[in-house]
Image (cartoon, rainbow, N blue to C red; front, side, top):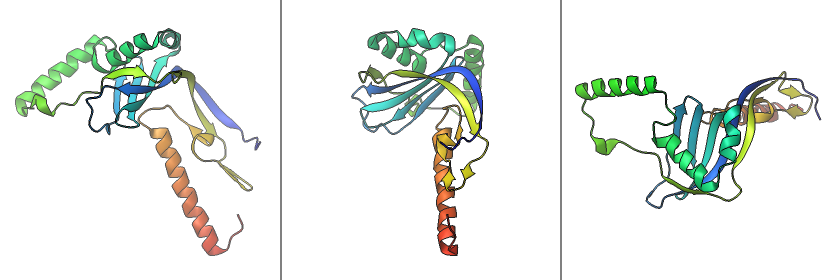
Length: 188
């Protein structure tokens, strides 16, 4: 082990993940869906035309309830979280509806342009899991003959794929540095 010190902060939230089976009426499942709820964001990320990956951020106090549901009950809760007002705050609904109404008076929007999240019909057996969420940052990213990238260097809240995108950026940066080192004849 490199024994690199880190700074860590607990979010007091859990990430619930699962592989979702979608209704058959989706010709191209190529849109990621994310909804911001008072309890935390929920995201559905496409894997194939029939499956998506779920990441649902919930408070510590809520994760056990969701994890103890049957698969059928859990699927119902996921569909509700994406489509109903059950998980929304009334003040936000009111403001959103008023803004939408004003906007449609200026620029009429056809209802055929609206997209809706996919309907989840099942979850892949034994794919549901929960883990505590925390921020982590290494005090240093490099040591002799060692480079930390991605989650080994920094871990952030799983929102909108930011963590994976940062990891991809780390890899691109490291590749550029290594290519330059090879051109310069450096020892790495």
